[in-house]
Length: 193
Image (cartoon, rainbow, N blue to C red; front, side, top):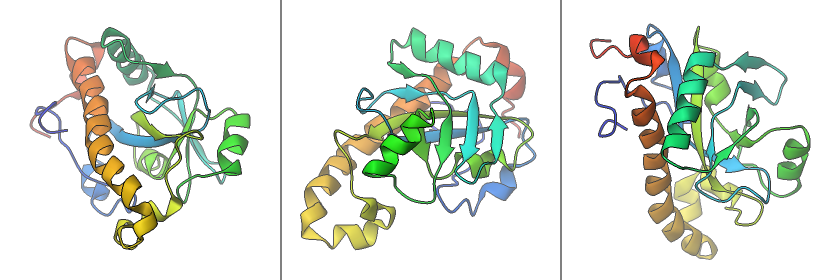
C-alpha cells in the first residue's frame, strides 16, 4: 500500500484491528484489502466498492459518497471488473451454503474487518478485491494461517494464496492510488496526518 500511495497514512489493522485506534483522527478511514466473493459470477480479482458496509448482526454504515464514487471511477479507468452491492463483515471465512445465503441478501462480498473500521470513523469507504468465491473456495482454516499451513491437505491452497494475495492486494492499492490522482477526495489526503 505504501508503495502505491505514499502520501496516505497507512495503519495496518487486519482482522484483529489492534492498531486502528491510532487512525481515528484522520478525515476518513479506508478499508483496503481482500474479500470473499459470494456469487459464482465473481472471479478472483473483481473489485468491490460498496455504498454500504454491514455487520451480520445488523449494524450498518453508509460509505462516504465522494470516496465511493472516486474509487469506482478509478477502477473503471483501470479497466478492472467491478461488482455492485454492499459489503458484509463476518466473524470468519465464509464458505459453502453461507456464501449463497449472503448473496441472496444482496451482498457483493464478505470480509472480516470493514464494519469494525466503519464503527470507528466519521467517514469510511472500502476497496476490496475478491480472492475466492463459490467456484474456487479457500478453506476456513486459513483464518489461522499457522494451523492451516500444518495441514498437508491445504498446502496447494497455501502456495496459491502466497502468489495470489499480494497481487490482488496490490490491485486494491492501485485503485486507491488512481482515485487520489486529481479526484475530489484530494482534501482528505494529508501527508502530515
